[in-house]
Image (cartoon, rainbow, N blue to C red; front, side, top):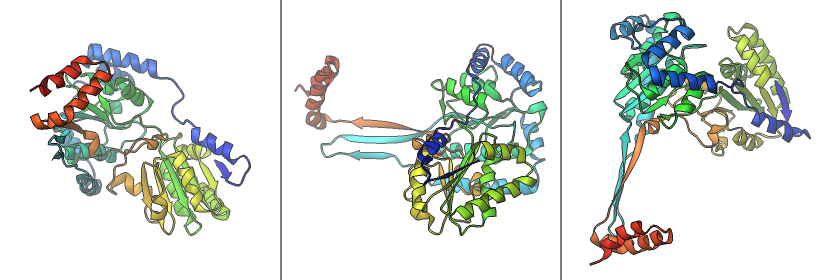
Length: 427
């Protein structure tokens, strides 16, 4: 864990190193993934089954899970968990309902009609992890915005190591309106969604997180299909003053560290005494944390505490880091939030831990990582919609603007462009 102070002479160099730290997998899996994609594209179901047997130690008879199997397994989901999923679904749906955009249709001052229609994608694929951890919350966060957008076919793939699956994942799929579920994972699942197989009709877009092989597969199939993003390790940045309970902040930092040894947790504070209390509290929590092996590796290798003279200094640092999650544990968090330009999602105040957002706050938990918050946003209804524009000129309006179009076409050396307009301007 690094301890940085803005007053140190070498702070700029150390902070630049922190910003540029690449925490993604260092092993190049592109060749392996390319081979898997090509094999699935060529051989379809047979290749997917072979990879599933090799990697998940599970011999699939049918790629698609039957309705009876889904119902049987979903019924094993504890009632308390299902109730929590239903509450989460209602809150996530309510927030994403507010995102639905309106079409545009107007006539300008010279009589040209212009417009824009929002149209839902026809079919999307959702990848749900099933390895290190299984996340029913990810099912809700990926499927519900698609359903609200109006996507008719929502296909889910989820690996089933040794033939096992988390009942809560299937319960979440039922709640979210997933239409098809396949018990496959890895790069082979991405290939099946992108190219199709004998059993799987290809989709138009693939969303959802996965391991390095899944991320690389999404990168390689982009263009054949759309993708949401290339997800990297989780991140949290907490801006906190000395009025906070250090134990609370320690738990918040570890909430992301426990995801992955490559996850990153950063604290920015204006109190050295408070910083030391948080560092001590992290060690105390780690001592009895069931996920301590992963969380400790993350904290020791990638964690950081940054001391600033005042919390206003945190904003330029934060905007450079462009973290996935930001907690503002201060008296007036909105004042700082108004200055933030690069973050996936912001959690305001001392009583808003990031974990609430992971499950049932309402905003999506699929967020930009690895500094991509500089140019990207979290998953939303907009990711499942297309914009189609339209234009209509009548004779009078074309006369008003057509001559300028001819001039520009001729300037670009495109005579057929110019002619297609000019011929309509001739009485």
